[in-house]
Image (cartoon, rainbow, N blue to C red):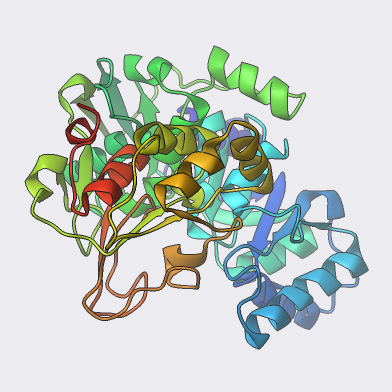
Length: 418
């Protein structure tokens, strides 16, 4: 079996499972946020259930419109807060909150071998530690609140083998954008994407989270990376428990195997309006920008801010470019303060936002007007994703984003770091 099939079999209490088979599996963690949580809670209450299956395995994270931007968003968070108080579930309020997919691993809630579902499509992020994690609908989450189980179809697996050491200014974001461009936004529809090869050992956990985070942008049911020494060191640091390490069998069957030579991939930029429109950053050198956003569950971790600060140090952003820095969690924000990164950003003319999804989904703290162009380290650039339906969003890694903020147009970081 593949690593995905092994995890699903273990949680369904079966000896083995096969792609296409429907199973009912026990979940280790159930996640909902301020957009999807109220719907799940409404369905839970309709069910007549008096108690959740296990309050320690339910996490509610208001992160999309927080700090609350209006009355409606405040009411949505209140629904989560009241539910958490009634049932004793985990709830992360302002001051402790962060973007959910950066927060949960940081809080030690994710382990290798876990089965995690969340009412958010980017729940696939946690595959970076060797877990099976996938996004589901709010009604599925409500059912899991009651039963502690999820009903799903075992996905077939596409194996991606990455070879070579990444070039300078190339990281997980570039690797996954290149991969999505290669197979298309539906190239892995309802499939597990297993990321392997020698390149993985060159990638930090932050880079691996970025890769798995965007599996959904290729239509993937999940993304997963076999745990190794880097995974173990990370999990023992944040969770004190590494969980169960699984590995794919040598004779495991894959729907497809795709090899990619990473040492030939330049920094990538995805043009509107799909993540699959990814090309060499140099092909966009004439694109002028109005806004840069560095953050999100894709690239708002401390290593991302360090990379951006390295470009920004001693420089100023272009006067026509609003540059918004969003640390993914409160801990990341604090660490950036301690390291002096926030000073670097402020001196460069950036503005710092509290942890929030915010502009990533056109929520707040960076919504675009008609005709405006943004370059963002977020994961989606669909029509109207960051505001007006006639605005334009390009995607990149943090170094490209900051270099472009300084130049006022999309550039390779080398143009700034000469």
